Length: 145
Image (cartoon, rainbow, N blue to C red; front, side, top):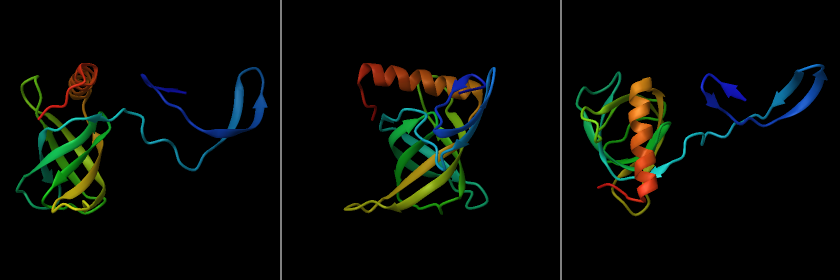
């Protein structure tokens, strides 16, 4: 299925067809959330909780994609909470996104939290910068530090 400029894969069951080009589908209860490939990359980012503390915190990515990030940080954010996310890169000013916390838990054997962020707002130009940078990093097989 194509939505806008992006292609999506959905799972479901064909319930009926109406020629020449119509189908009635029952979609699966959950869709694959891994639409964007994750790139293992270590980079320091900045998070500022929306509707919370105005003090930004530093976090380090474990992996990053156009759809979100897995980060390690010393200060937890509540699941469902939102944050401004600043991601530095080679294009000059940082990519700015709004991320929603999907989960946050203490990492086993560490004194840091692992927080999963889903980007809920990322502008087209910002997404393009991030996409190009991650593709280049993945192709080169490098991990930034």
